[in-house]
Image (cartoon, helix red, strand yellow):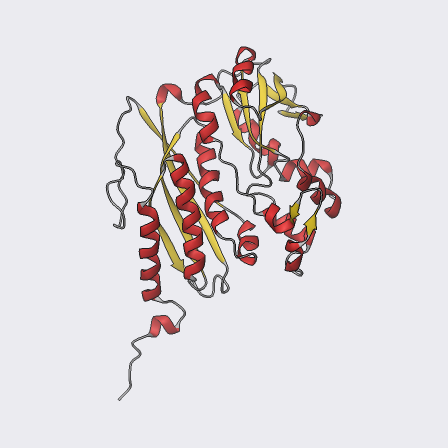
Length: 340
């Protein structure tokens, strides 16, 4: 008589029991972030009640951390990318004037590693707590054959809310308005595929421990600088802002035009802010053209703000690190970004 396997799924590489234990671990972290508006956790669908708004408009965004997770995995410092994904998503919806309500995550691995998952979710929970965002659900998937062992992917989904009358859409922007820049904390979450090639990280992971005097730290520490969240500092000033652009993949050229109306362009002055040493190091080591650097990286500016001239002093007083980096001009031809 043929003996049937009782552990066929685990022999195929999927451990259901371990998955259950990890979900319990995630639930403990998530519960520390829940507000009174979160009605449940762990059901097939997560529920969140919206109160206190007259004409609430929901604003959502989804994104990933990209190949920065490979560096986090190599250095066994996975809480940082958990913070990264929350901060990235919060910044995205902030560009519409929205405050974060709730967040969900998706973590996929070839083989579930509890320590990795715990570190990632710890980072997610910490970042959610800082902005008052509830971590109300998510998914942890074990996918042998798709991801090699100890590698993973991380995706975040956020929903926020803004009163309809307070939506930031850039529609009132006009030539003569001022463009301000808020500094980034480093590369944030973009350009890491190029960075890994420039430094040869795949072939020589030990280079992550090389110290660079101009940065005052080792390479790995710089590359894992957490994506800065602009919500706490910008929240009090949102009523004075005409437009916000989160400088992510595509740099200035790929993001600022998304926050401008037709008929105008952004004229940016390169020397008006300090470019952090990591970008200069990447450019020199990789022999990369300057235009390509500005197309791939944030170059030290993580968020741009457009306001009318009378609001500049208010914003510079409220945001000590902000720099005046350009102005809005009438569009001439197809080019809507001028960098000089």
